[in-house]
Amino acid sequence: MPSKRNIQIYEDIKKLHTKYGGNLIFVDFTGMTVESVNNLRREIKKIGAFYKVVKNTIAYKYFKTDVGLEIQFVGVNGIVFSNDTSFFEVLKYLVKLEKDNPLRIKSSIFEGVFYNRDQTIEMSKLPSKKELIGYVLGAVNGGVSSFVYTLNNVIQSFVLVLKGIEEKK
Image (cartoon, rainbow, N blue to C red; front, top):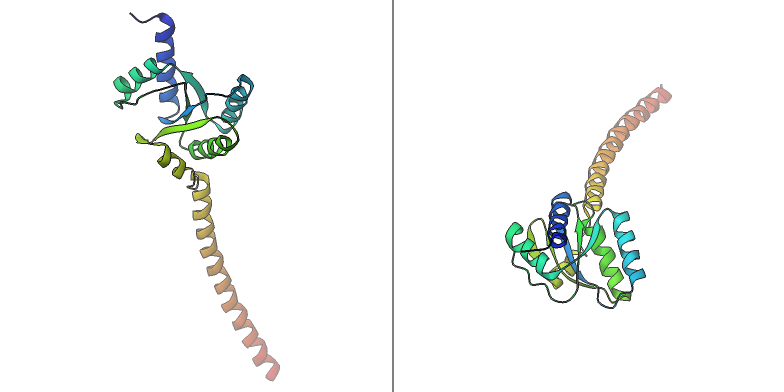
């Protein structure tokens, strides 16, 4: 029979998974100091995500029973829970952090699909949702601006032709 503490941890994982929409990044934090882990938590929270250290057996059981993924948890594991809008920003932050710290990205789940370490690192190179929206708006705005400029140029040319005719008479 599981202890009340383990049941509570299981429920916490379930709530966080539901709250953040199921986008997760699994990390190994072996070798990090308590201060650096606390800084990691603070920075991730600013971005809009949540970091939780989990027991391997509880995490394995949760993902197998509730999510339907059989993920092997080895060593010390932390899970970053993130929503769609902050996932890529958090991932880029973790990749950058990994270069200077003992933190190691293990894998991720994005929109229900499991990605291994290499695939997760490659995803960090993609633009975020905000950046993509900016690209689309820039393209739309550029087209509209060009159209308005063209219309203005036609009117301006017409006025200049009329002015030239007026000066000849």
